[in-house]
Image (cartoon, one colour):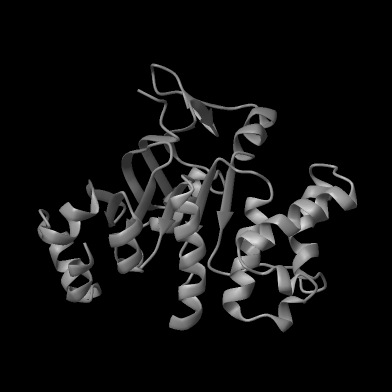
Length: 263
């Protein structure tokens, strides 16, 4: 048995007096595409941000490729912060794509993708731009390398953001509703890039309302509701024969019933 890419154990996250995540237990296998679905406000984005250590959990642990990220807990449940250098090394294995593109407006597509390679990895400009261009080719934007974000469509900007994350050679990619701000035609551009990554065996966790993508690309579906995992399983179990009444209610509300026929 290989070590899970991500192992989440008894994860709790509170904001003030409100608990957003209630004892989450999850495993993401190596090379697996896991899609997190559920109603708005169910804690999906918070879970993803905890996985990337962009949010600090209140309780529980997250291990990335067998290494504890953020906080470790001893047998008595006492939490100890993992050393900063270790956290930095573990986080370097994770790439994340957000709802908003967060591109630097004064840099071209090539500049946006190559900047971290130069500043974080200390690569020469030539080597950084060569590696960045390879990623722009991968997302189909080699012809837009010299364009600024204002000259790109929303779908193109999100593909630049994906290329930027990929340029750092992550082992795991996290996507937080990457198409939520795009119209249907541009959504297809982004989802096709994600399909290609899945076909290459990239480990991916995708928070999305794109049920068709989850049904056809996802290998594990995670249904989150009110900060609790109510169901995990393969898409055929989720979309053909929902076992949890709340999941069935969600699918009746959010899914085009014809999407289940894609399986």
